[in-house]
Amino acid sequence: MLVTAEIAMSIVLLVASGLLVRALSKVKDIDPGFRAEGVLTLRTSLPMPRYGPTARRTDFYTRVLDDVRALPGVTAAGYTSFLPMTMRGGIWPVLGPGIPETGSEEQTASLRFVTPGYFEALGIPLRAGRGVSPTDTAEAPNVAVVSQSFVDRYWPGQDALGRRFTIAFQERAIVGVAGDVRVRGLERESEPQVYLAQPQVPDGGVIFYAPKDLAVRSSLPAETLAPALRRIVAKVDPEQPVSDVRTLQDIVDADTGPRTVQAGVIAAFAAAAALLAGVGIQGLVGFTVSRRLQEFAVRQALGAERRDILRLVVGEGVRLAAAGLAVGLVLAYLGGRSLEALLAGVSPYDPMAYAGAAGLCGAMALLGSVLPALRAMRADPLVVLRSE
Image 1 (cartoon, rainbow, N blue to C red):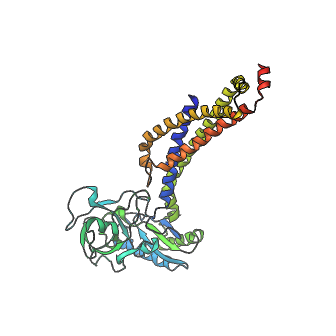
Image 2 (spheres, helix red, strand yellow):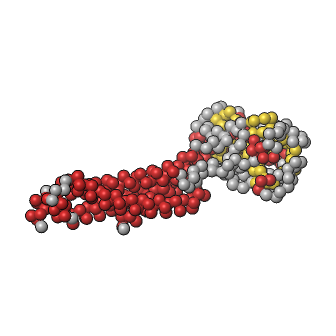
Image 3 (cartoon, rainbow, N blue to C red):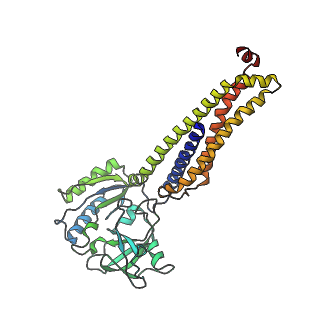
């Protein structure tokens, strides 16, 4: 019974770790919608009320970006309210002609205010129209760039350019359609996104969404580029602090960090349980064999061959292991749904995880039974009977 319980626990833990590892590998293969390589980011949260007027914030962004883009090796730079995967909220209702007012989550979009150059800095492709332009000033008509998923939700199969909708208390006209970005993490499906031109934010309007994260695409190493960016910010505003200096790849890796820890911890427990089960099988079968050596000697004296002894011992060990496998697979199947919230792109009943766990435990049980069986069949019957 002890061996059966150990094998059952091993199966449960091995299945759980297998599901998490497979989910982690699938998450890391997901396209986030942007190109993280070669992008350095930093945060400059402009203090209020000193930067309350939109024109003053626009002046800060423009001066910083002009100097950043002049740096050797820099190919693009732009500001945004929140970088992808750093803000799980930012969801606003969407209103407009032809959009039914359901009041549900299906009538919302993720909102960001950005400066010119943001799409180029993150490598977000434009599917139609244009991105945010320097001509999108406070005096110009209010515009928006939306994601492909936004178009697919509200005007599927139609041309969205020029259509109008209301978000953040203002009506906007769509001037561009960008590729989808997994703004709330790799494990969440792409959701509709709206990008508004920063200079068109009314004074005092949605201050929390004022752009604060600078993204710079460059061929320079981070340790060279970061000091230059700090100097530029200090030149524009000596009192403005700089924080959260990191690469965009670091942000992407941090999104899968908790899952990596979860998978590692459960895999360690699974390995320990499998090891204990293997030692338990070998120890129990070995003890049983030592107590039955006289029986095996009598069997051989009556005509049993060595392979019969091997078959007998291994068969009993395999029967114990089979019982543990059956119990463990049932428990793992019943408990699989509890892991569903932790899985992305993998079913909680993924056959590969179950087959791998069962195969590993089966092989471990077979090996733990074969070694004592080999010792039993090699024992000399005359020596054993004389010792008794």
